[in-house]
Length: 92
Image (cartoon, rainbow, N blue to C red; front, side, top):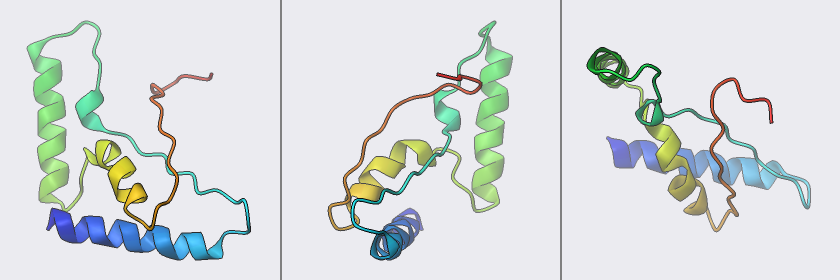
């Protein structure tokens, strides 16, 4: 199922690319629950995130998609990708 979903993301990227004007860009912003930080850090916080990841998986979602976007987008016919981490609430 994950490979099938990855193929769909790549297909969407290719379709979007065809709609771009020369020099246009595609911006993809997606979170990844696996990169969550906690303060104070503790077992209960990590258990809550693991539960959320599992619940989204059962509902057909992928709360860890953020780490998979770069390979999915670059597989889409050589789309150039630039990635960076931005924490929730960051304004810079």
